[in-house]
Every structure is written in C-alpha cells, then in structure tokens.
Amino acid sequence: MKKVIDVCHEMRIPVFYTQQVREASGIDLLTRRHRIIPRRRLEFTENITACVRGTWDAEIIDELLPAENDHIVVKRRDSAFQDTEFELWLESVSADTVIYTGIDTCICVENSFRQGFNMGFDVILVEDAVASSWLELHKATLEKARGSFGLVLTTEQLIDMLRNAKRGASAFRLSM
Image (tube, rainbow, N blue to C red; front, side):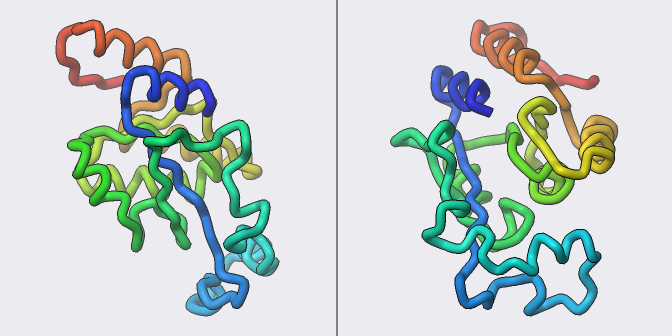
C-alpha cells in the first residue's frame, strides 16, 4: 500500500483514505439494524471496542499516515461510498478511475469497488495491496473483480501502467 500511495503522490494522483469509525455507544453497529448476520461476520461486530472513534485501532497506522493534501473518508459501513462524501470528492477532482487497496478484500474493498463500478467509475484493484483473514474469499474476490468489474494488477503492474500513461503512451482502453 505504501508503494501505491507514494507513486500516487509522486504523480499528483489524489489519495483518499477510508477510515472505519464506530461510536462508543454502539449506536452505529450492524446489530442495531440487522436481525440476520452470519456468525463469522458477527464475531467482528460483537466487540464494540473495535474501531471506536479516538482509539488506537480507529487510527491510520503511522507507516501510512496521510500527507497534507490527502483526504480521509470516514465510513461506518462496508462501502466507502455509502453515506459518505467520497463520490462528491471524486467528482470534484474529475476522477473517472478508482484504484483500490486495503482490508478486508472480500468485505470493505469489494463493496466499495462494486458500488464504484456501478456508479460509473473504472475500477483497478491492487492484488498485493489488499488483504483478508478469509483467504478463499480473498481469492474469489480477486477473480470476481478480474472477471466482472475491472483490472486486477500487482503494485508493479500498476506503477508501470501509470508511468506509461504519464509519458504520453497512447490513450488506452484496457481489457485483461
């Protein structure tokens, strides 16, 4: 992720972070709204202390701290687009493509790239800059993204593509 962020800074590509935040009161937990939640997913939400505003695990890690001109999208649900300013901010910088990194590949990242794609943004998923504790679902998400939504590239492939585009390589419409 650091390499992707660094090259985006170098090339003046806007960088948007998402930050999962919960309230200490628990008012925004999934369990307040849903009656049906799969057991594995519920295990992540039963512990209200996870990602509570102002606590260490709601913060962005030191190695990836945003630069002065980066933007932080605070989210409470899986998708970076749901009930946030993300779409507005992308439109304000005339973005047509979103490069996705982060965790959890098969929950937050997938929901974000699916919604972004369905809103008309082109999707690039950086396969070595996403992760999940659910390895099989992680792999399945990469295949779904590759087959139905956009490009799935390694960090090095992404950097090569961005540098070639900057050098003025002919406009491209990619299919892989």
